[in-house]
Image (cartoon, rainbow, N blue to C red; front, side, top):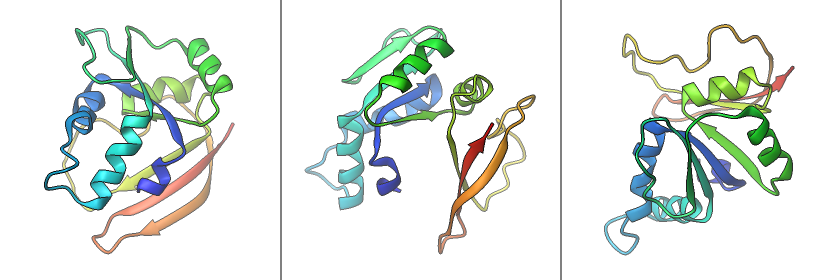
Length: 151
């Protein structure tokens, strides 16, 4: 997982995902953490983060800025100027980016748990061809799928 995240230089997050991910800001890397957790924390610290939220009062992590609304043209400009990958996390934010034609690849982790509801991983009303480019089955039943978006 860390190797898949390593090329990302900027994360675009919705509010909920940002609130989950900000734990990495204060992770005690000298304490009771694994080498894998320590490695991911360092990747996260090194990346820029943009949080899209109309309700979050402020961001509390370094290298992070808050945007009140998603602007597809601004994200296109950011993406075109980027020297490393831009990752988009959170299904609502990703839906906006996918609808705007900003998504090149989709990476899904299917977990063997039925929750009976929640937010869909892929948005309604958006049609795009997908080409499978990678897959991996983990021993715990999780399946990783990577697709290239074809239009």
